[in-house]
Length: 106
Image (cartoon, rainbow, N blue to C red; front, side):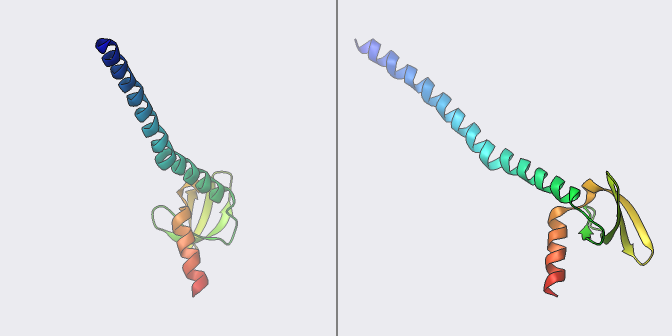
């Protein structure tokens, strides 16, 4: 009888271990993977909604104003008459938000 009780207690430890591993996976998903997916969707939406005249910052830190937009590229004017073509994915959502927030306060 004592051996039966010990075997049953040992078996429940395995279930606890699987439950804990499952909880770790769930926590990892909600705190790491899901926010990253949301951030990527927001970045893509921002790039798709760009229009002429928007002030943007690229991932390289170049500030400018959108002059022309194609399917996958944008033309940014960085100075009077100086224009550079970038992929839409090179425009930083977060840096552009900060730039526009500073410009609106001034």
